[in-house]
Length: 415
Image 1 (tube, rainbow, N blue to C red):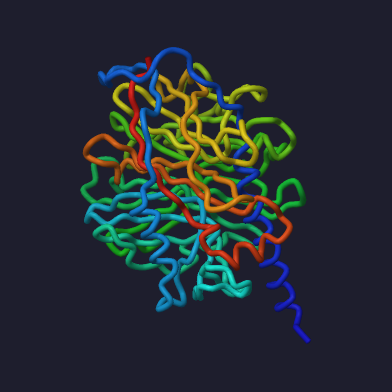
Image 2: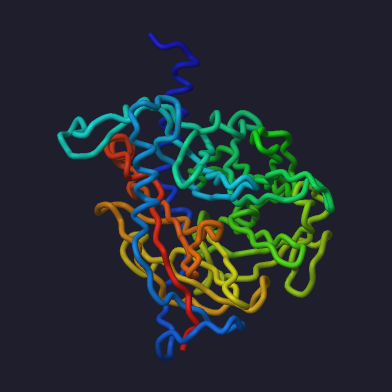
């Protein structure tokens, strides 16, 4: 008969799988897609002008590389699938990929136990709350010991989001990796994927990628309404000695139709210093006043809690999921001439390919550090089974349902 610890672990695994299966739904509460007016794209002048996606194509090489690595039967303790896909280029040329909920263990087949031509994992395969995989020379090479960021307390966990390499301190010659972390706590429905609690910054040493410290930079645990709590780090951009860090709330968890986007800025070298953070209040940067939304009106405009921002010429472009079709299937965008907005849109972007019916896309992330010399941008999106019923069997029976996919796209000035 199983002891209490065994039963607790089994309940924890079951709850985690249910949360993973529904994460696609709760991360993508956004607005309907609108078609921009006017003609087609015109040449990019580098000035701040409306931007749109001129064309896009599947990135089979990157998508296939994650399938190759995850399916390798020689590996028994590394990454086989995950979501929350973020990346950062290291000074020695390696690429560090960061993931949230992650499956480890061995992958089998095909065929799977149902006789289908899919690789599969055992239903008891271990899952951890976060992981990191190193890519070297275009190939995934190793999974760091997982979880890389341990749980801060019982029923509380860390999800890594955006990261950057910066000086250990302003003016320092020594570089470190700063990783933004979302801290979430277990909670009752509708908080099936955790109650937003705090934003932390982890410092990793180079070149060994050892976690040196974790610092809380924005604690939201005392805010009584969890849907108003903001977690920072879904995306970041750097400009003129500043790091602009974007975040979102979880308004969709309490039936508000969309979430809102926020932005903070931090001097280079001080991401791990809470005193250095300044939040955009709608008219100024402030250390005392709380952040105010830069995008999202709780009715027709807004973002999913995971979105991405990139600078193209003089224009800032924000990518998020749109809810204009059945399921989660369409990526849309906004544009702005400033990191703080105002943001214009939404504009029609693309419908990324999905592996089968019943699966949704979420967490669109641009990876500028691997974008092409011809100006093409690499965008990843996560995929997941949408329905809670049968989720564990689906994710175990077909490992491709819980891995990132990639497209290559080109932006142009909109007509």
